[in-house]
Image (cartoon, rainbow, N blue to C red; front, side, top):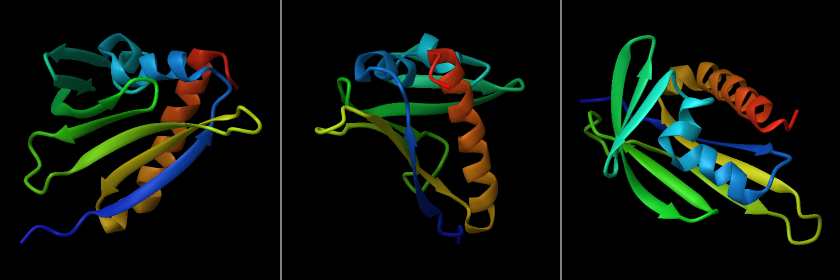
Amino acid sequence: MAEQKKKIELEYLINTSPVILYIRLSTPSGLAEWFADKVTADGKVYTFVWSGVEEKAEQTLRKDNKLVRYQWIEEEDNIWFEFQINVDELTGDVALLVTDHVDPEEVSDSVDLWDKQIDVLKRCLGSL
């Protein structure tokens, strides 16, 4: 039996508008800027390429300027990752909430990887 994945939730403050951030999270060209070496889409199926290795995920949930979820096609346990954009009503601060499912022994490495990827995203947005 496959080992249970552990759900992790990470929050990052990003100095940009929800509209601009959403484009970087939901489009192949936006994702290719920071998330993967190359990203293509065929309908709702996105192909992510890292170091020549392809992984496919279906965009299963989408709320404009708020939320986008991708479900890995090769995973049998409905494993997904999600980007949620939250705007603080008082301050206007934009926060990106990343939800992912990882192997329990890889939590620390996964958090480090997301931290690095989000730093790249912030650089792309001029938000550092």
